[in-house]
Structures are given as C-alpha cells and as structure tokens.
Amino acid sequence: MSSETETGAAAGSTADSPSSSINLESVRTVAKKDFQDSMRSWVFWGLSVFFFTLLVTITGVIAYFGEDIAAQGATTDVLVGLVSEITRLIIPLIALVLGWKAIAGERETGSIKILLSLPHSRKDVLLGKLIGRSAVLAISLTVGFVLAAVVVAALLGQFDVADYAGLLAMSILYGIAYTSIAVALSSLTRSTTIAGAAMFGVFVLFYVVWNTLSNVVWLLASREILFFDTVTYTTEIQGQSVEVERHQDWVYFLVNMDPGEAFRRTLTLITDADLIELQVELNAEMFGGELPFFLQDWFSFLILLFWIVVPIAIALYRFDRVDL
Image (cartoon, rainbow, N blue to C red; front, side, top):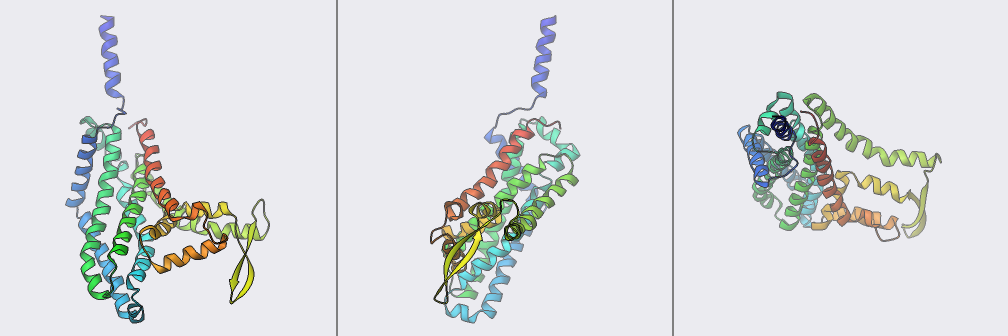
C-alpha cells in the first residue's frame, strides 16, 4: 500500500514539475498559433503598411529634394542611410511592443496554464512565442520592403538591389534581437504592467543612457576623475598634422555593445552606403588606420547574435523554474 502511495506521489510530482525538454513540433505549433493570432488582429498587415509607407515617403522626399543626389547616382546609398537611422529607432519600439505581453499576458490571465496543459513544455512555449513574434516582424518588414521596391525603383531611377536587400536583412536581424529581449523580459514577470515598465526601461537604457555614455565618460576624463583618461592620436586637417584626443578602447567597446550601434556598423557587411563607410574611415583613422576587432563589422554582427541568443537563453533557464 505504502509503495503504491509513494509511486503515485512520485508520478504526481513529475507531472507537476515543468518539462525541460524541447519538442520542435510543439515549438512550431505555438509559433504558428502566435503568428495566426497576429494575422487575425491585423498587427501583421498594419506593420506591413507602415513599413511600405515609411519607405515610399523617404523615397519621395529623396526624389523631390535630391536632384543633385540622383545626378550622382547615389540615391540608394542615401536611402539606406536615412532608412537605417529611422528604423534604428522604430524597430526596437515595434519589437518591444510585440513582445510585451508574449508571456506576461498569458500568465496574468492564467491562459498559460491552459497552454501548458497541452503537450507543450515551458521551453516550447517560450521559443514558440519568440519565433512567432519574430516572424510577424520579419515577414511584415519583407512585405513592406518588397511592395515598396517597385515605387522606390520608379522614383529613384538608380536602384541598387543588393544594398536594398542588405538593409532588409540587417533590419530583420536587428528586429529579432529586440524581440528576443522583449520576450525574455516578458517571461520574467506575471504582470503586464511590470513587463511594460521593463520594456520602457530597455528603451531608455539603449536610447538615453547608452547614447550619452560616451559624453559622460568624456566629461569624467576631461576632469581627470578616477581612472578615466583620453588617448592622443595624430590626424591631418587641411594638410597639417594635428593632435586630437579620443576615448580609451574600452569605451568604444562598451558603446558598440548597443544593438543600435551594432546594427549601424553591421550594414557595412552587405551594403556600400558611402555615408556609413565614411564613418568607418573616420573611426579607423582614430586608431592609426585600422579598426580594432571590436569595431569591425563582423564583430558587430556577432553582437547582434549575442542579443538574440543570450536574453532568450537566460529566459529559458529562468522560466523553467518560476512559479506560474
């Protein structure tokens, strides 16, 4: 009798404990449902129209005011430069909103328990939500870019398909990075209010704190506070050698860890936008003509992958152990 009781208790304990396994078919099912829900709520189509309108508007502005640019055949370069700066701000906002209630909303309403009563582990649900939300952003970006391509080519005349496709690919990767951050944060709380505050905190961190970091360190260095200091290098200005100061290497490394900065630099991997290349040349001059590894485009690509993998990896570990 006692052995039967122990067996039953053990079985109950096993049934109540979260499964740590990942079933790819289960992940696909959760992702598919998440994507279909977005389709029914018009989130997907709304984003597609938004990206289409954004591209067409910027293209129209370039075509109307940029006759000299068109004459130089640099219209696609300018388009990539302008769109990348705008999407650098907009895509994180969209991704954070998409991921805001991904898990926290399910936990707040209690529907997460119904979802987990099906043959889905917690990890299946988390990965499925990430893939589903990422697919909404990625495919809506693609639809918007593809539909706008006809208008862009017609208005610009000069149209570089490779640069245009490169901007799309890097924008998708950038969006997935922020979606991973959003879904990971959403899984750490059962309150959508706290999750929303966390999303706002992430945006402030990268677009207020991180962007002012360089200036703050420069101020500390100018006043010789603590261990902050500057490095002197020689550059040519109007044919004369001039000594100029820059930050220490670790400051540039830290600044480049910002997903937005990494996105900007990664564009040089698969685009030839002159405005972006000019920034790379200026930075290289500061380091004696060759960029250190942490400022090179391939390393920036790894930084974007870091922001995709690490947040969701932490969430997978933590979400498997929280009390729902």
